[in-house]
Image 1: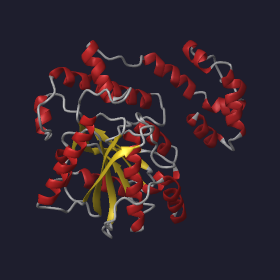
Image 2 (image 1 turned 180 degrees about the horizontal axis):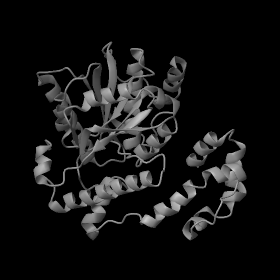
Image 3 (image 1 turned 90 degrees about the vertical axis):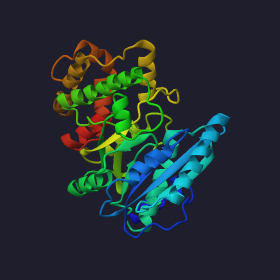
Image 4 (image 1 turned 180 degrees about the vertical axis):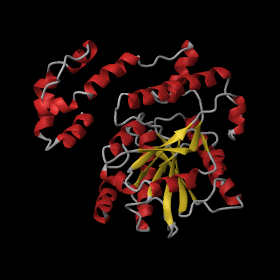
Length: 367
């Protein structure tokens, strides 16, 4: 493992960014990308008020920008950095070390939330490796516009202690659904209008329906992939090549790769409360969905028949392994989706590279 993490850091990570040595008992690092965020202090203050875990935790904030950003974004980032420094200099209880990284000139080609998460998580891995936690240390993803339950650190710590084989977990989340919940969760500033809250309620229902439908049909990778509500072990992070640099959907693709290692778990007794807000920063996801709802007054979701069609395919895995062909006729929409290449080239390629049904199943679901 030592050689693996060293090779990863040498090949894929930036040079060391934090010179302060980590606490010898460091076991968990929370990484927060921050881009054009007005209330970072509210987020880190909330984390610092959580119950301390048994092992040491710390936070790395990556305040990031690039040459393609408007001057107003760089100005906000500098203002945020100054506010955070002032708060850190004057706080009373500092059980939770918080490191601020200001990276205003990331290459425009890759600048975005994926790159910011990667920079922070790579540095977190390096610091965990400094104290011999390159295998079992925990890398936790959070966002600068979130709040959480007081047991955030203790709950994550206990969950991974109870699930020794789990490479990672998805953490339960709930968006505030009205102004009362907005202020109750500790969000500052003016609350969004009710139309935004209605939009996030609709989008969250879509997400929950989608995951529950996947579980209902027996799909083995049915879990939420919210960037502000996930955690992985450091060995899994290294083994799957670290965080990707996608400018949207980085959380989905990252957890998908982690889930190939072993069974992902769901941490349900800790809650992350992401902020509902409009955003034109990415082409899909929460901010885009709320914008669509505010514009159109509705959101689309997937029809139940789509899951029934997928359930048919899941039921064919055994037959595909044994004979290379399904044992009955696919639903019409599924037949169009699979096409002739499915049994002509896709299934044979998976079969020839699989030694048994279990290996075939894993390869099939990766396809």
